Length: 319
Image (cartoon, rainbow, N blue to C red; front, side):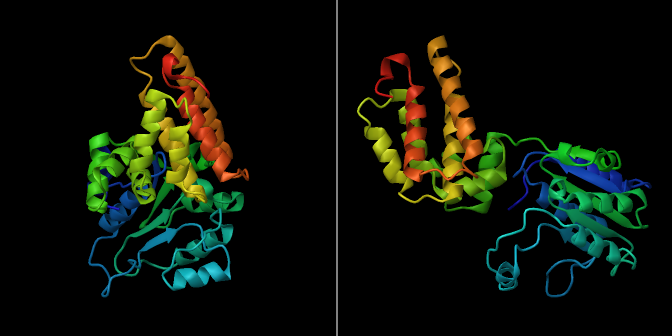
């Protein structure tokens, strides 16, 4: 993904690079999908400097820690360059393996960057082990901790980091990010992705993959017109398909909440109350969907019903 925006973060980083006393630990904080990891990689390359290794690949003085493959089968997929399932956490073993590397000098220069993504998903033992390195960092070693929920980090880790907060991008910046990374996306899909992403270019690109353009129009119709004869809800179910993936369901839930939120201004109090109630129900469903074993068809029908229930009072019936 091309990195767009975050001028303030770059200004802070480059001013620190140019100063005689560069802070040794940085906490890149903000919601998922804003481009923090891409920033970390580009910032790390600026830090270590020099040419990339011949033939490309990872710079030897940039160490990236992220959740490892779930098992040997998934490890083989990674080795083959295929998508693979990851463990839920960064383990203490990964941190200790990284610390072994810190006993040697950087390979190509006098600086080394350690990127941990996401740092807020470290095991408890991993957090405690990392703290020792942050307390006594080796000369020339700099840490970049990517965190979607920084409050989950140990306070002692946060206190040793310089915090850079990443803010959601504007809709125009999100649209630019989509077009830069997927030139084939059509106007309806881009519009839906921008609406659902809430300033997150990473999320927007995931929504583009789900091809939400048609769903976006149907959901808008449900909220604006209601669905007295159940026709729109039937069309919505057909458009989503009989066996949507968990990612597809999550995208539909996120998009439906964004559409409801956009309808709040300019409507009467009764309609506002209906929108708020429907939005609350969708928030609950979004929290349950990743772990509950919902029937996909019934869940989609419920989403459609909640959207229709938020239509103006004259259009709400049979919902």
